Image (tube, rainbow, N blue to C red; front, top):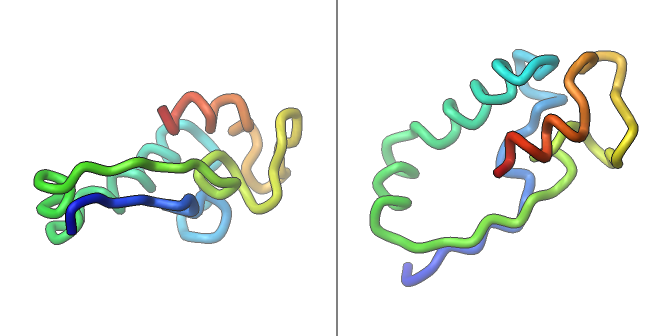
Amino acid sequence: PAFLLSCGDNVYYDSEDPIANSEAVARYHWQRMYSLPTLASCLRNVPGYWQKDDHDLLSDDCWPGVTPPKQAPLSFVQGQRLFR
């Protein structure tokens, strides 16, 4: 491909084990996804744009100020910071 457009839900903090309840576990989800050999090879050669969606920040249908009990103390604000 000439360009990759990722339209969100790149990782699922709230439904894939382990459930992300800390920044360390959230980073694990990104590392696990983007260390896959085929994806890493593609991203070395293809430019892209990543749109963030609810699962990329915290959980399904999340918004600033919400912290789902199963993910506490990980917060929406921390999820925004990690996406960058």
